[in-house]
Length: 481
Image 1 (cartoon, rainbow, N blue to C red):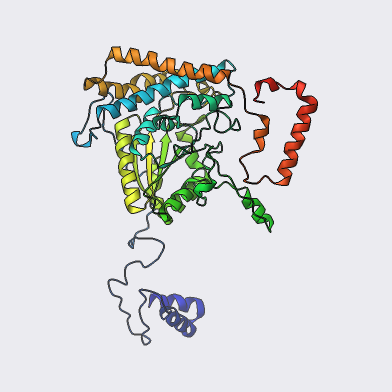
Image 2 (image 1 turned 135 degrees about the vertical axis):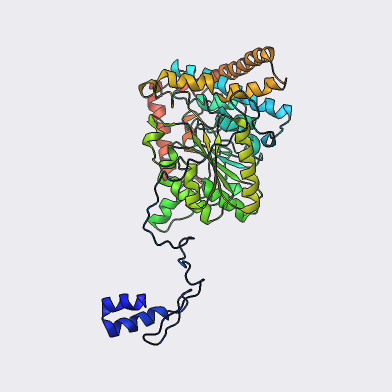
């Protein structure tokens, strides 16, 4: 009768009842009562009194109440070890063998050593750019150790430890940063934009969050050794097709959807920072992954700063993990400085993602001790004391070292010997990289198309003529002939 009364106010008494009757009799509508003679009370079953809206799962309430953002307590941070490397809850100890824990530690410290040498190299003008991983090493190796070696990795730009854990050679790290002839990308990417098909690590792209969302299946035969996608050149029949021809085809959710369709028993892991989560691509990726039920792990490194912007100016909600349930994504927040907590969370997320074909979101809380990059001076927006606290009091490397020492697997003498050995390894690769020439300029035009189009061929020929005429003005002796 309430519906009839409302209709009467809009259309008038007699027409209003007819309109109400039409609404109640609409075919295919679930939970609506049948029409009754005028004046007779309508009865609804208990099932009918529940909301039937297709867009949400909820109950009716009869009190006006807005949901406040601070009503729910903050999502807790899962950890296994305290800051002294002691196991808090023995049932959460993954009981990793000594050999594996030592690999975790040595990877973290080797990455730290490589960072220091390449950072100084940039400061001396030997390379153009660099980004360190100081303070975030635990997020890299803890997650990498929990993955299968064939799981596909999409990084942002601060995940070198994942590649290092997969035994990517120091020589190739150096070759990429120096853009020499040994670089798998053939000198066409800026430093720290690594990629390796053999280790299932997709080449990094500079724009934030582009690795997260859509993309179609990358067929194995089209993936080049550099990690890029080599495109066949069909004959485009429209401007839209011509634009689509050059579109990237290697993003994370699309790759996960392809793995699901192929029943490949593998996951995709996609790394990004909390700053990148503010991009629209993150929204698109989360929503696609949830609705398409893709086996993907979204791994957010929440290190406190998006370059110079602190988290207090990035968002007002409870971090990134709180966004997961809104998209229908199972989520967890972990202590990113606790490598065992990162390992446990990633391992369980991987297991369930494969078994259930569902996306998972891991927010690893950590701190970026270094500058954002060599183009940044973080002393302009944060104090020395703040950085010193995280470096001295809550560092993932020192925490794992305490864990190792507590089990008698490590001591000061081994530490000293390993530091010396790891520095020697990095310096040998560094010196080798400096001696090698740059790739031939002709490689600027290769590996994009399977068959080079006429326009690109004309540009290649134009460059060759230019260098032949004005080559004396260029340091061509530094390049491979």
